[in-house]
Image 1 (cartoon, helix red, strand yellow):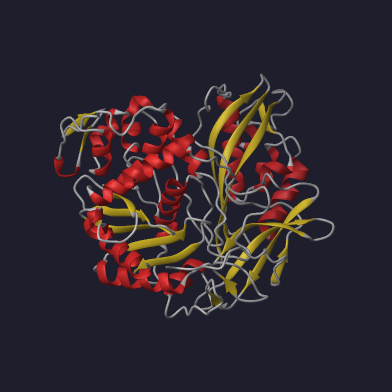
Image 2: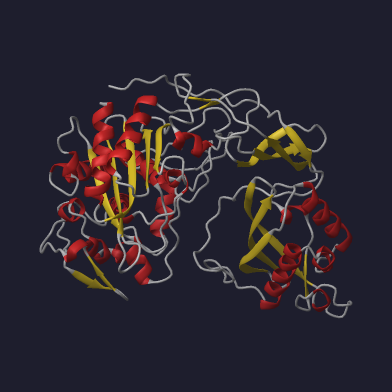
Length: 549
């Protein structure tokens, strides 16, 4: 069996590198907030929609800012001189080439105020794109006072942006500013036991960290204006910035080698990604992709998770008491909710129990349970118990999953079995599998130093009830012994799993998924252009678990 050294080292304080200090303004990481999946502009929940003229003024301000017309942007605020000075210094100081901004949602703040959420993308020269979310406060202005808050600047008469540092970025204050740090060169990468991981031998690890081939690395730090003390790192580019020493990872070399060999053997030239992590603490013990060293789809892919999502959907239903394993939930060939849904190869199981629906992966049965969950319930449950949609601190660039609120009953039906607008990757689904197996979300971690969240940051989650965990484990175990994951049935121990076949287009090939756990690790694999998860991802995961027992 695998043995590991417990514990995590503390993050090192500071980063030694070269440097552009920014005296004003900055951007930041994506804020932890829930956004609807549409293009925005409407009010959220029960909030009152803002005056459309306020939204037009906000969009005009953002358009001028993006185009570099800072005088025009500032003219749409109630403090033009201060606004222009801050925006102009900000663009120069952080080496931002051409920012882009999208207004997402406008809500009223009383009769004379409004707030417009926006998304920002800031390309930093030679490093990558820095993204964040913020909000523009607006106030109703005197329309007879020269029109500076409206038509002269391209906005709507009667509204101005109420200028404050926090609209540039929520963490920008009179006490804190941002600094861009750059570092050139390579860095040694160490495994969990201190051994060196060669980028040549393990290109997927190097690619995930961005430490191979002299690729530029950098970070944007939040620092104290008076002391220059680093308060935190708001964004990283190209992997960890660590001039003081090597990058210390959580990778287990034995599991990593097994993952690389399994993908090379079974992916058959198709794009694929895999992540294995420890259930006990979330530490990533393997990350692998094909082609090796190519796009890091294991951490950055944005796939529909297919029927592997039924693990989370089932947890939500069980937690609510909406269904029990022996309840009859019919599994017809077709079920129409706005569009016709069907099962793989249009199979059916008449008079099926929910247990049979799960282990044989019946889509229509899950669609039939759509009324058991509220419209926002799957989104909120995924975040509350599985951390999906919140910001993770893995130590490497990662996409941390998205379960948006459905726009209608058709989208809601598709989401229940992992289609529609849901997005995930092997990192997200390996973490979800570990949570299902243990009942506790533990944030995935790849880099021990510099990868952990600051105290009070990271996802805030709750424990799954023990009876829900027991039932999930039973369902996933039965999927191995009697269901679609029999490819793992010869493995020793109480291995549990869930297969997934995710539709990409109506006519095109599917993506094949499989997630599994044994007594120590949870693992997820996606293979593009596959017919079934059991046939494509199944042999990969089988070989990894067999090699590491």
